[in-house]
Length: 146
Length: 126
Image (cartoon, rainbow over all chains, first blue to last red; front, top):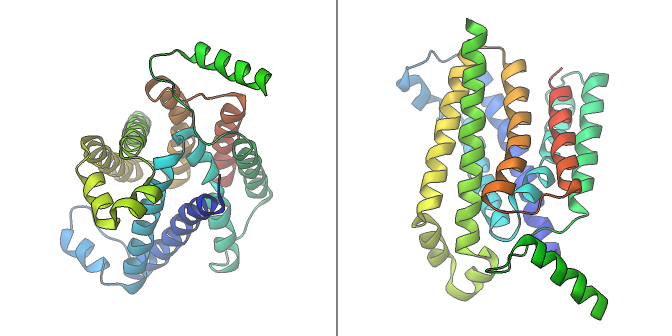
């Protein structure tokens, strides 16, 4: 894992959390939209916060696809779930929502999960035409040589 | 009855987003390291390559299905149930699906991570 790759994972996290907050803020301004009313839904995009939110979520998607091009799905998802923590902090400091003890506990659990997964390898190496057990043995073999 | 609707919509969200994530992951593994490709071929070639990948298109379609299921679920159930239930089940579902369909080596560390994050999401919504 290089510094650039951590930067990509950080952008996955930040774009998702900030984009969601912008969307939430914008949609509160727009007000309720009845289901099936496509004109209202189209008009919502004109709200600058909603437009900015969509732009950030597009950025999230690009960063997410980039991360998936060199890391396992089971690595990228937990590693980028710090976004939930970021979202809670944005809610507390910018949207002035209360954070209960339970939420702090949830934040702690997520952070622990992120810590777990980022200590391991990012990508499973597949050896063509050889089973997982064989790959394991190969790994052990190469270790004993060094 | 409403309970049953809500939970079937949650199940639809989980199935659609888990398969969508698996498809997107498979697509991007076929495309290859985007950073290295961009340096070699340029940004436009990379975009064309991603957009022409059938797994990518199927993945985006499934993500859209997941989003519509979310809208349905939200019209039947509370956001404080639908949000965390679908997010945390998706985390665990992804770990299972990645092991079976993508042959990723999901070791103890990754199982722990998926379960901790799923539990954390549930607590966040309390």
